[in-house]
Length: 229
Image 1 (cartoon, one colour):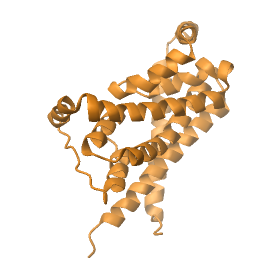
Image 2 (cartoon, helix red, strand yellow; image 1 turned 90 degrees about the vertical axis):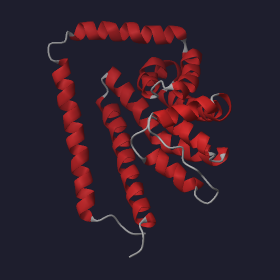
Image 3 (cartoon, helix red, strand yellow; image 1 turned 180 degrees about the horizontal axis):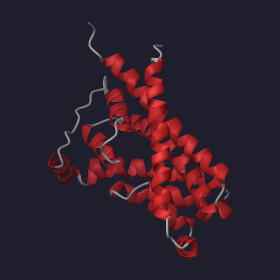
Image 4 (cartoon, rainbow, N blue to C red; image 1 turned 120 degrees about the vertical axis):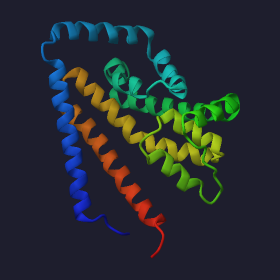
């Protein structure tokens, strides 16, 4: 296996550090002048409403709504704080993983069976091309779509379903690509809302590892698909 040049590794690490610093500066700026007691009361009301709805309603919504454009982060970030006391944090992560799998399958069905004509025209209207997939290039196409920044996650699901990617391969690759982001977001959110510094660091660490892994895989795919000289 060809290793990534040290210069590229250093450049990627610098970008990650700069990104984290920028996020910290933005957060500090936004919190200037904010009454933390008001924030705390608003947070209590928000999580109180989620807990009143209950985990069944929450994770059912997580399994359905992202297939129509709701951000997955809207569920993963508050999930730990909302239900860890009731379900434990590993329990929340396990249920979130299951809900995400259901959502991936549901998004495929929506695009393939329910809204195919409308989605095909909509995807083209927004400037995306529906990729044409064969048995030979299905895995490569899956990885390209899942690892390339740009289209939102639900649009990726639609594109892959419309392209004819085999359902089993679609499920496995999509779920595995989503897991690091999902777990990292749940842990990070729980740490932010509880003030647990270790959880914040752990969640950020998982997200950074996911970013690095994506970059390394993309670099390897570029080298593999580059024309020989």
